[in-house]
Amino acid sequence: RELWATTRRTVRAKLALPLAVLLIACLVVPLPRFVQTGDRWIYFVSAVSLPALALLGWFLVESLLQSAARREAAGASALDHLALALPVLGGVVRARNQALAASLLAQMVGAGMLLSGALAALARALPNGVYREELARLAQATRGGRPLAEVLVAGTLWPVEFAAAVAVGEQAGALEDT
Image (tube, rainbow, N blue to C red; front, side):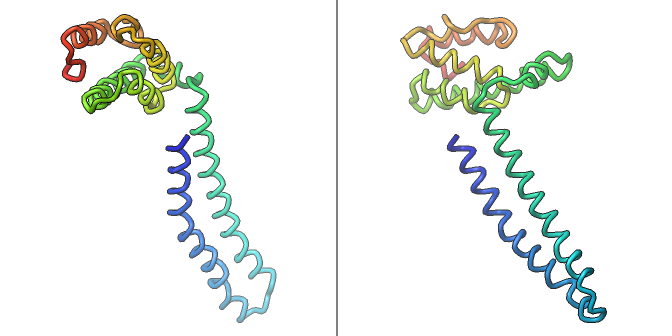
């Protein structure tokens, strides 16, 4: 939630100045035609239409950011499941999430973070909701002191090689190196 709040503040801050310039330009640009013709209706339409479109764009970006934050908080969506089920895209999505999980987990554990804390942080960081839910489950299971290799189920989300590498890394005491 903090990440999305920071992202929303950043996007708002970056959009505020261009939006203000656009609003001022919308009021100034139609002035010469208004001075020449004296037609208030043309000035009103040209001065109001572009700001209305700019505000619509602003609300669209804001709603997209909020829906992404809600989707992250809600867990896996039907789209996340569909992305994993598609023939070619599913493999790419799996590989991306597995690579991100492995590299980020290695960095966090190597930096001295507890395994359950690192898994909980990963559960908020991965792009696919199915993997986020799985990592949240793993974080909860390892909180009690169970080894990751014991709770990691090889299958659809994690290949057998990945589970075996985790088991070897934990037994060797060098999980971040595997």
